[in-house]
Image (tube, rainbow, N blue to C red):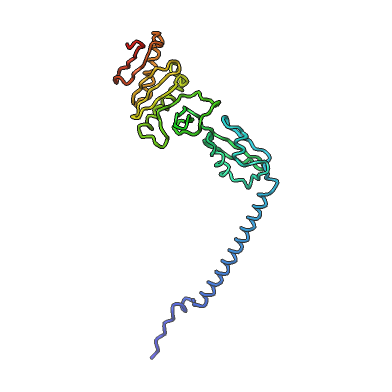
Length: 275
């Protein structure tokens, strides 16, 4: 009787042995270590080269061009940037330069661009004041967003409508915030070229605690009660029509007040004699 054939182990049948597996793993580990070392050397070499280039006279800044400034001076922007003719263009951090420039009250945004190999261009976008806010600390310029960004001091340009009735900026209620936005919208509307009521013709807009608005003109400081209506464009157009009528009828100088909060579709003009 023939003896049954013994079944070969799986590893032997496939030509696989634990010893061979360990040897291959060791080789791969050595190869990985060699590659890691080469990469480290290459990275260190690249860093050294970068450091040398960052100190090279070839990339030393020889020209700095500054554009977009009106309120600020080129000297101010340059001082804020922290860059001079001894700086290296390659080693310069454009983000840090931009952040330093944008820290100025009047600068809303800045762009810093390299012009290789040794020129730097800085373009600033300044804030555009729309009105003056009368706050407990004095008069402050505000832009279209209603955020006070710089204190207004003589002999600076103060020829802007003044918004009064606000307390400290952090204490404004929701009604006051909305009234402030309506006041700024009214000033923007007037600044689009209105002849009867231009932005320069507005002296003051007083904001009440409940969101009401009272407007005063430069030419004659009688109150114009706008109430708390949110229809800014409609209110502006109606007021322009009323003022135009007063001018034509030559009763403007006799006007004591204009009440646009009298009735929804009525405007009350009070005369100097109470009529």
